[in-house]
Image (tube, rainbow over all chains, first blue to last red; front, side, top):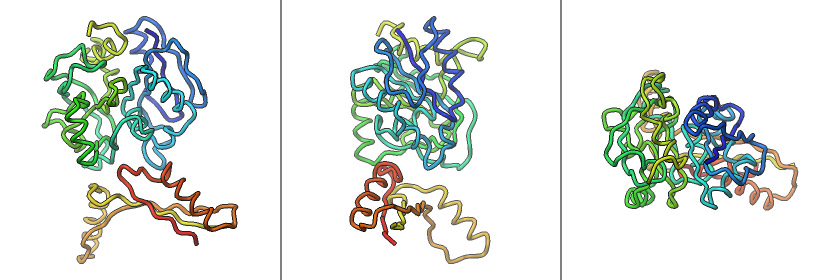
Length: 224
Length: 80
């Protein structure tokens, strides 16, 4: 499978993401700059990395979500291409209307940079099939605006349809997210947004490889 | 030229931790009668049109599509 990484001014986790995808898939991902209007036909996985696109001006991810490349990402997603947004990437996907809800300022008002524990809330998604439901994995977080919010009806809907992919364990929720939500998929199941950084825990040198199975699944390297 | 102001505020029911922090800071300054603070944003926009109705329609579109995130925010438009 071929991956593409979206590049925007102010992102800073793109190199980590490119390194992780290259190591796991065995080939370097295509990189796509924000002004490009098309993504190669043979790309099966699009990743929007973390950082501070457009300096978090207006709202985190708001400006990035309206750049030309996002129209191409939306089109590919509608055709079934898998999309992962991590951290700022998650914020961009909710701002683009590709995932429900919003990401607000952390309840503590502090930037949090630490390791959390995630419960795999649904192992039946295209991104979590390398885990088992209920499995607890380690993952780092680093963000100021990761407090997931959705109105009660939307929340009930995503809970009922199994769209919550990852939850923080109750004792490690770093931002006050409703229902401890750390990552969700869209209703079609091919778009994942998550605040934690699985790309930073994929090999022994990182101190663990708990995030690796996510990319293996997304890249079709795991039997679902 | 038309000047306008778009005000964006959090919907009621959406927690506003920043407003809360400001509330506590005001209390610390001795303003003891502060009931609640909600933080919002103001955009002053100059438009080249001279048609107020057209300006307002365009500003509403701008607010809905970019200035506000209508999942969590409401907006109002005022042509000055």
